[in-house]
Image (cartoon, rainbow, N blue to C red; front, top):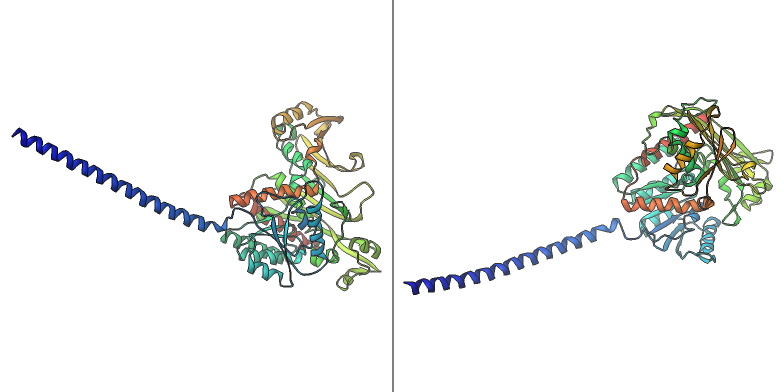
Length: 480
C-alpha cells in the first residue's frame, strides 16, 4: 500500500511539472502576442502622427512685405531648413529672396535656408495642392491676406500671418469664419505681434501689475483715457542695414488698408494685453466712441525715393491731388473696452529726422501712479519708461521692492533713478533692447511652442477676434 502511494505521489509530481511547463509556455506565448499587438498599435500611432511632424515645414506665400523675410532672419531647430516660396514673378519676391540670401551669406551667424522657389501666377492653388509644408507664412497685400488664410485652413494648413489679417468689416467676417474652420481642422492661426516683446512695454505691463506702485487702472475719460498708445512711422527707412524699397501698392489703402486698421492692430493688441492679461475679451464689451482718419501727403520725389518708381501708377491716380499723393494712413480710435476708456493713434511721416526712427508713446493711468513711455529727444529717441506718482507721493521704496519681488527674477539688472519730484526713470539693461527686427524671432519661438502643444492659450483666439472687431468697426465709423 505504501509502495502504491509513493508511485502515486511520484506520478503526481511528474504531472505537475509538465503542467507548470505548459503553463509557462502558454504565458510566454500570450505575452509575445500582446507585445506584437502593442507593436502594431505603436506603428499605427506613428503612422497617424503625420499631422504633427517632427519638423515644422514653412511655405511663404506671395511675400510682398519685408516682414516675411524677417521671419527667416534666424534659424530654429524646430523648423526644417528647406522653405518653399510660392509667388508670382516680380520685384517683390526677388526682394524677399535677396534678403534671405543676405541672411545666408552674412559673416556673423549666417542662416542656412534651402530655398525651393515656385514662381507662378497660380501660386495659391499650387501651394494648397502640393502642401509641401504645414505652416503658411504670409506677409504682403493685406487686401488678399484673408483669402489666403481661408484657403490655407480649409486645406489643413497652419497660418503664421503678419498683421493685419483683416482690413475692413467684410474681411472681419471672413476672419471669424477662418477661425471656425481652423478649429474644426485642428490647425492654428496666429498673427505676429512683435510689440509684445518690446522691453519698455513689458516693463509697463509688469509695473501695472504691482498694486503698491500702480494701484488700480482708472476708468478714464476722453480727455484722459485709462491707456493711450501712439505710434509714429515712416515710409522711408532702413531695414537690415539697407534702404527699404516699398512696393507701390503699399500706398494704396485699398490694398494695404488704412492706417486705422493697419499699424493700430499692434496698439489695440497692446491695450488688451496690458489691461486684461490672460483674460478673454468679448466683442460685446467693446464700444467705439470716436474714430477719425486723415492723409499723409507725398510729393512724387518722396514717393519715388520710397518705391524706386518714377511716376504714380494708374491705380493711385484716384488719390493724387495737385500732383501729390494723399495716403489715408493716419488714424485714431477712442473706445471703451471692459469699462475702460482707451485711445490709440498712428501717424505716418515721409522720413524720420536724422538719428531718429519710428517712435512710440504710451501712458497707463493708475490710482497711485502713471506709467509713461516716451521716445523723444530727451530720451535720445530710445523708448524709456517713467513712473509718475499721483500728487508727488514718494514711491521709491515700493518701486525698488517691486523690482526685487516681481521683476528681478525674469529681468535681471533693472534699476530705478529719480529724475524729478514724484518721477522715476526705469533703467533697463541694453541686452533686453534687441530691436524690432529681432522681435520676430521671439514671436516665432512663441508660435513654435503653441504649434508643438497643438493649441493657443484660451484667450488668444477670442482676443484676436476682439482686436480686429475694434479696428474694422472703427474704420466703418470713421468713414461715416
